[in-house]
Length: 435
Length: 143
Image (cartoon, rainbow over all chains, first blue to last red; front, side, top):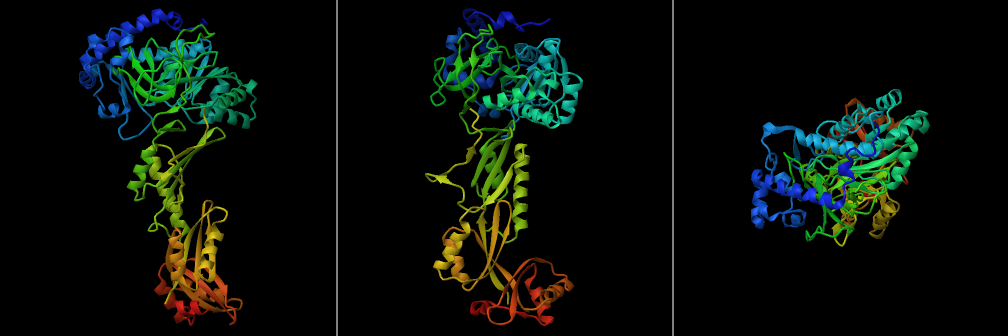
């Protein structure tokens, strides 16, 4: 049975009804959190806010924010709102800044998350007639499990490929007639190139749509993927802290992502003042989980900069739309789908006996991120032997790989070789021009 | 006995070499021998100069990454097989040569070889025992 919407009554709900639904859920959720999460109760008490002060979404701004720092402070159980006996799943962030963020799920949390992914799959034309190839990583990373669950709910024949082993991906894709591909956009581009090298034409493969997320990508990249795979390529957004992929998803119009706002209440704030900005203004995206039982974050600051829009969408969905993230309020980089903070590089350098004088250069060549780190050498470290310097570069690259999970190319350079503007070194040069 | 080699880290950028040689020229430093080891990203310039201290200070003051290494200098005859004879001595003594470069004398019929080895004293002993004449800082300055 082909459907245009997975949950029509929600996805096309009139705005007034949605606001009412959100208000009812918010009042209940704030009470649930206040009663069960001491960490957040303390934050509310500190601000002088009681659950009864929150009568609807118009009172949302009274609640305190949560940040990634809070998640680290409260690791692992500090923000848990249900007994562990009621939890069935843990997922974790890809980043490795100090403590990982772990998120807990009850069965209902998993169900609602999978519903969100199912909405995304139906929005790209998915039904039980489709074969859905999930080439996101499976495991702690939310990409694989989320889309896998969504695909089951829609009734697609699901190929739980996980990422990597491109030859096998292509074999299953062609032999079993995959019609929908879910993976990171850079991996989709890579599969497209490999297919071309193997002599396949876009019309030789049955794919019709792709759901690509977990890293930033451009319209140009979208067109490249669409041409090489002969598909329509759709964006999907999410974060482990709220659930995973499926917080928002693109429809056929491809002009921004509909937020599943019955579950995730979105706000845009001024990142400096914390003040809520009106619709259409650019600022930091903040989410409040309205239905999460185990790990219900209220006013969680995503650090993603974007714009919200209630402009009428030709797909018929009334769910508010968010733009692609246009940047970050912190210095986090997403390189090959992995979160990288310059501070992690600094830690490695100090551990390895280097001064923290470095520069990260990120670029995108043939749709794959390149990741280079220039590091200034001290006179004591310099030697007349080429082999010693190459070995030092290799050791540093290995230490960074251990910390970050991805391999940089390390270049040792002379002291003060790294350009300093107004006395302050430019730590990150991102040449990818993604927006 | 060994001689001082000045090693300079050279970025793989147009104009780096000339700025180094300009600095040396301005300070009246005469280059006796040089060699460059290059990789994809950087080069290592090794210099034997007439006034090591002056070259070292000049480059250091101008922000170059430098290192002074003691290397072995040996005088060999300017004829086929002479370099081979010197290297053969080291080989017999189990001394590994990490790199070397050579230059010709201006007047005498001799060549000079600069050798980088792990144990300078051992290499020098072997070469002298085999009748080779080693060169010193004074020799370099007189060249």
